[in-house]
Amino acid sequence: MTRRKQSTRKTASKQHRSGKAARRQTNAPRTPAQFFVMPERLQDRWIGVTNAISKMRADRVSLTEASREFGLDRREVIRLGGSALRKRANGQYAAKANDGLLRVILVLTEEGKREIAVRDSRQATLVAEHWNAAHRYLDRGDGSALSRFQGRSVIDAKGKRIPLLTDLDELNRLGNAGVLSFESLYARAA
Image 1 (cartoon, rainbow, N blue to C red):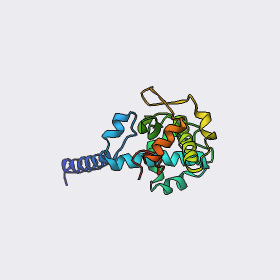
Image 2 (cartoon, rainbow, N blue to C red; image 1 turned 135 degrees about the vertical axis):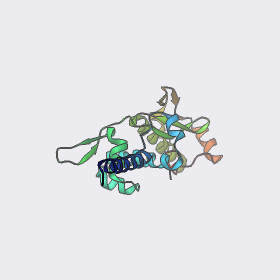
Image 3 (cartoon, rainbow, N blue to C red; image 1 turned 135 degrees about the horizontal axis):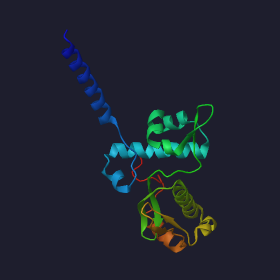
Image 4 (tube, rainbow, N blue to C red; image 1 turned 180 degrees about the vertical axis):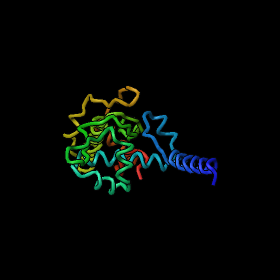
């Protein structure tokens, strides 16, 4: 075989592999616009990545266990959510205390449930705690947990403040209207 043919075969083989890898490559969304233009299956995958990292942080489980729970490969969680992870001296990954990954979540406002994007895990935690307090009030009639959210708001990815609903009459109205359900904090979660 001539040298030229060998060279062409190697080049074609490299191009095929690099093209295949480029098609599989998914980048982490940095803005709500980037998230919403992603196909729904990739949105679900991204939500799974953020859920896995949140689970690692909250329940102190391993990357492998958290990835498995959300049907993901651990390498994908590292690739997409690596900025939220740190590698320990023993080689295992742990979630950082907080992160700046984009999360599209549902927040409870006077208008009902509203889908927003946040870029801070602490803001997502605040919204989750608020949902838990609202759920507690609607299930048990205990509004004491809502009092700590009086006058508080969450800051979305664009820097806009969104006040959290603490008015018990309004919660009753929304609950009776069937607007509130507590399946998931995350928008479009599977």
